[in-house]
Image (cartoon, rainbow, N blue to C red; front, side, top):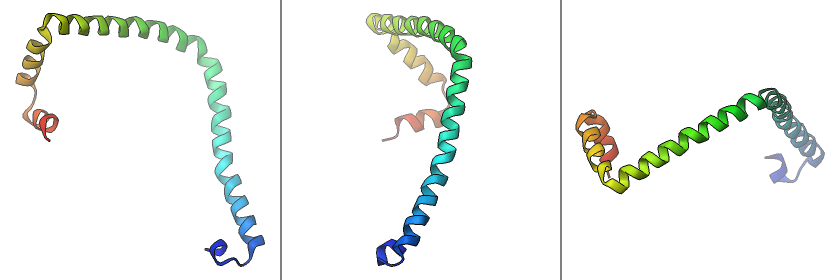
Length: 94
């Protein structure tokens, strides 16, 4: 509001500077903390990533085979038949 009026520009600049510093400090602290945590957890995350790639590849291959054989329609029909009515209504609502 002060800046829009064009009055007390020194006070406006000081207020905006303090606000900017106050907003930036927690983000900087979070950035440094997360960087340190990432360095500590790097080995575990890399091994988890390798395992996740294998699982994701298997899921994609299985999905591709289901689609290629047309069996995905049977799986879909089974899931729709056994899902709760509220879920079917939620997912088929336009």
